[in-house]
Amino acid sequence: MWKFLLLWFAFTLPSGAILAPTSLMAEAGHVGYGPTSPALFSSAESLVIDTDPVALLPPPAAFDIRNFWMRADLRVRPEWRSGVCFGGGPPMNGACNSLNLSGSGTSAHDGSKASDFFIQQWARLGLGYDPSPTLNFYVELQDSATWGGSGNPTDGGQSADAANHQCGTQRPGQCRLGIRAGYALIRNLAGVEGLSAKFGRQYVVFGNQRLFGHFDWANTGYSHDGVMLSYARTDFDLKLGWFRHSETDLGQGHPGGSLTPNLLTCNQDVTSQSVCNPAVAQHAADAGSDVDMVVFYNQIRGVPRMIVEPYYVLYSNRLPERANPGQYLPKSASQLRHMVGLRLELRDGNWDLVHETAYQFGRTADGFGFDNQRNLSINAWASGTWLGHTWYAHPWKPRVAIGFDYASGDGDSNCVTPGGTLARSCGGNANTFENFFPTNFLHVGYMLNGAWRNTVQPQVNLQARPTTRDHVEVWAMRKYLASARDNWYRGSQGPLIFSRSDNQMTHVGDELDVAWSRMFADGTVSVAVIYGHFFSGPYIRHQLGTSMDQDWGIVQLWTNF
Image 1: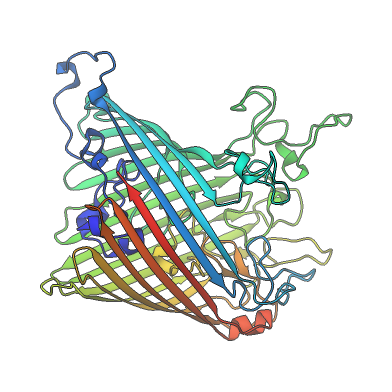
Image 2 (image 1 turned 180 degrees about the horizontal axis):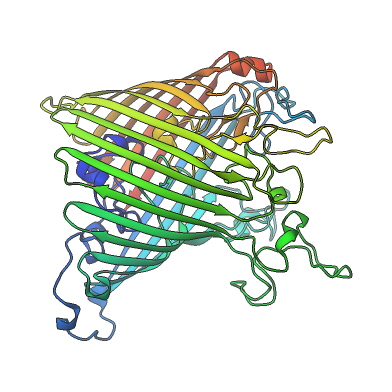
């Protein structure tokens, strides 16, 4: 059934598609969206593993072309956005307004009726090689581009878009070609049936992707460097992963050589002329500004008609507190955050219920100075629920679902000290929920006006499949703030609008999305058309001084093999 769905319809997939082990699916293309690929049926995609003792296998032979496989994707997506900042000027760093010196959101940026049209494209090529049933190597190349965005718009010569095929000339370090995934997967590790280990850059996808997903709606998506251990049996699947998100060193670990550090801090020699970042200079001598994440995720399948997924996450950010002092910034510096959560999925006949709750606690620095003392208490939580009914006997498979999402905020998130220094909180707590690495458009709407941060969102969703190739959907949401003085966050988790210090408005607005998709060419090509309209609410009018609604639309062509 999942062959006929696009990614944004993934939360309606049959339980088998949603709940199947994810250790290989993302990299091999089996993520429940887009056209299917012959690679899905290669040995790297097989979930039935030969359990014969490794000692009985023949010794590895030389390279065998029959063990080599590949997959490829191409997606082209024109996007049109009208009223990007609800009648105000264009966004800056993703936000439609700014913070003033007293920590209060300003009115809209200068300008009016900012709108945009652009075309994005990505191409992916995945190469896999399986020397044996218990060993798999996989590399996925990705080219991510905005048409016309790689060159100097004022130069028709060598620095123009047509002459640049790797990095944007106007955006140093922004390169379109990269490695989306690159890992080795060892199954039946140490001869233990069901025990596997994956080393390298990989997708981390769990549950309904509220906290960990591939985020392929974006033109690059998420992947992580680290190691994932998995022990899977019929009734359960245990996963333990460690991932490094930031690495500092002493000028000996740079991937391009050993003369400079990955994170260039200020040289402590006052005579040094090197360019540096003073915000991260505190650990220049010990290379201690690293960021690590540990995930322990469990799936219990032994309960009839139910999936139970308890999990624990440790996020350790050891960057100096002034590196990004605002609490409103996702994954802010100098914090030790713990998260415990539980996801439940129940299916009984035509009914299905999905619920997830997570609580976060720990300590974080206040951002006032340079002492790196974690003197704020983290106290944040979130929940999300969907209740749906599908008429499977009807030819169109109509479905109706209602949902309710909540994530805590913090009224002191825009704190500024009397001396004008941006800080993390003027109180003793840091209560804004951390959304981590989600696929947010599955939960906040296709316009991505929202995140699982400082939000209250009731919603209703209607879907149908008029034919085996067509899927239609109508999705309506009301959007509120959980805390009036915290900000309204966008899908990438940064502020979309900074709240005023005297704000009491919580009704942001309402969103209505309509989507249609069709599969053709034997399921290797899909086309989708989506239109979204956002009705501005009193919060937007109060914060920005504008009242224009927002319109957004796409036409997307996606093909793979």
